[in-house]
Image (tube, rainbow, N blue to C red; front, side, top):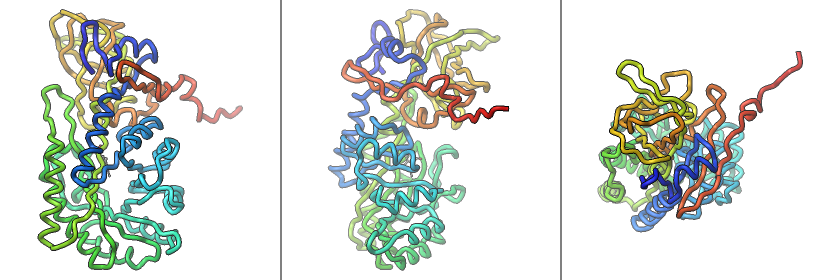
Length: 420
Ligand SMILES: Cc1ncc(COP(=O)(O)O)c(C=O)c1O
């Protein structure tokens, strides 16, 4: 989002115009930013020999999947819903990888039917279920997810490595999983996967994890598996504060490559194909949530602005204290700044952010909240029976609707209204 004389613009479109066209709350995705992020990852992947799969859990809908695939990236899906979305977008199976730590029978059947190019297996039950479905005539390409034991520094709710994490095979059980996979007809053990968590800002945990992953890859090869892929996951941090930490992604990817290269060199192994799965770092900065202020009030020293969003369209601040920078969007103001607590209309304190805003902020104003592309809409619920917001693309001064706003009546659509 960019502040202009009469307010704020997203993708060259005034926020007022977007709010007028689609209503609020609205997730506006700046496609200029999105396309630049996708192009950056595609070219870095090409340059460094790294396969890039966009982690669809961050945000996924048909037009987004299509746009990201057209930009040259694969897509990591972790549910049938995400798979259906990618399929509807026309993404070929070879560009899809299936994740998930509790895959359903239907998802396992979809994998066995060849609807994804490969699958990341989380545990023994899943490995056995896939082995039952695979045969030499219809093989399944698998990576084993390893809990590398590396507990990176991040919020506990987005940490996925270390003993306290449920994900993957433990280091104690991975050899048994390798032996089982190698002995199973139709299971092609393509390599190892180790996602550490989200919101990571330095290379250190990736480098630590690389040692364990390469070691596992070596054991896979020694057991007779082709094991050519080593995926370090995603997790590249994005700080929503204007003066927040900025990750040097180019350097991080080069460091990851060097760490894997060093580990491989020390063991005299052939270099594997490295894979990454960025989610947040592709969509977070492209997204801005637009809200209408419904009321402004003061309780003692606290000044509140209540907007038409809620914990239902953005649970991140409540879940793990995420920061989204707010800005007055529909007009300019010369008023001094004062601290506001911006809240939604859920039945919790529902604090979206505490930050300075122009003191003349009033009911009817449009408020923008930045860095809102990742894990907001994709985590949205119908809590309080609020309908989910609309999503629009805005770029090069043009805009269009890409996900319809749920109607009020939509919240009733699954209720079984039995006659008494
Ligand atoms: C396996 C896996 N890969 C990639 C990601 C993407 O992480 P981020 O959006 O932080 O890049 C996640 C996030 O939970 C994940 O679980």
